[in-house]
Every structure is written in C-alpha cells, then in structure tokens.
Image (tube, rainbow, N blue to C red):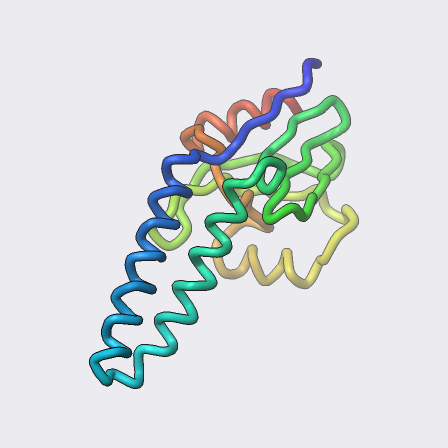
Length: 147
C-alpha cells in the first residue's frame, strides 16, 4: 500500500483566520468607544486567529494513511491509530458539521470512558478533526478501503 497524506483546506483556514481578525478589530473599535464588555470577544477571537494561523504552518495539520494505520496531526500533536484497533469509519454529522466517525474494536487500547461518553452522545466512539479536503463519505470510504 502506498502512503497517502491529506491536508485541510487552506482556503477554509484562511477564511476562518480572516473572520477572527475582523472580530478582534471590531472588538477593539468597540472598546475604544467605551464598551467594556468587549474584552472577552477580543481575547477569544484573538486566540482563534492565532490557532488558525498556526494551522496554516507546514506540519501543523494532516492525515497520513500508511500500511500499519493512520496518523492525524492537529496543532502539531500526532495521534496514531493501528488498523487492527479500528472496526470502521463512517460519515455523519456532528452539530451541523460533516465528520468522519471512528468505531474501535472491543477491548482496544485507549480511553474506554471517553469512547463510551462519545458513543452515548453521538453514536460513535470518536471522530477525525477534519475531512482533509474530501467529503466525509469519500474519506470514510478511502479509510475503510485502506484498512
């Protein structure tokens, strides 16, 4: 099997960064007009702007599919999942967002309480943080085929 690497959509990250910066600018403008409650939005959207800018850096976010399993990286933190610990990948929706869900083989290593909570909340034990420039259906199919 040939190693495949997928990346998040840069245009989406740039748009989210731009919107965050716009909210920071609007918040600062409102602060200058005397709106004291605007500190929270300025700080929150300022943090968002930094995160989206970091996500644009090389190596900050990707999905790599290899013979042994998959590795996804979010904010430079890698998570590796072996194929033999995965039961399957499924496309779905989580709070208006299209995602790829992961269900694990019973007894596989990891955080069983968190997986149980996730299963109770959304019907699956985990999810990928992005769809890496694919539709959820397409990515779930690629992953199930690679498995």
